[in-house]
Image (cartoon, rainbow, N blue to C red; front, side, top):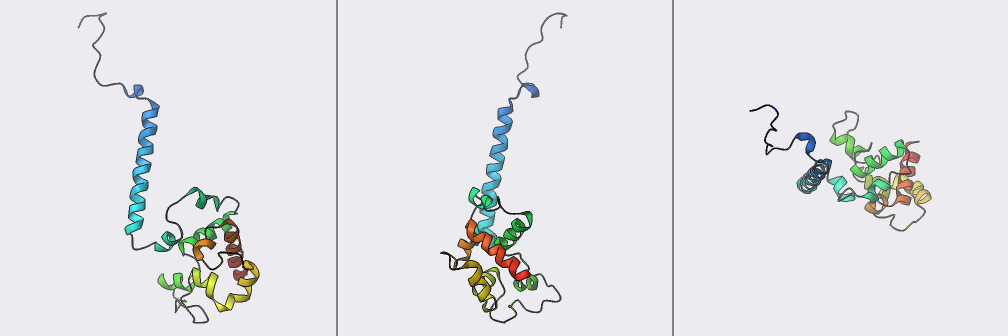
Length: 162
């Protein structure tokens, strides 16, 4: 090689020459692929079906449910939607020593979110006072997907805890 003569161009572009747009497009593809895999995995998964019953996919509507809630309320909403909330059904499945049955204290049914919010005779008066007959109050999916009913369900849970 002689001095002063330009070097021939290489076929590989320099790393700095790669446009930022390509990196962004690649990141979007990875997120999309991961999202598809996540949906497919949730469809086949045997655990976490409680969430799937109430939320087929994560949508803007689901995220909007949390917008006006405090952190405490938002956490409780997630617990209600995932059915990982402090009720006997969950505690019994986790082998909590002090919980000897998955049934409610009245022995009627498994103490699940649906039983707690919709069926338990122990909370009938409180349920009637808080929900006051709005439409959709007999559907857990509707209650956990409608902003006004979500707030009432959280109020119901807090009123019960008090």
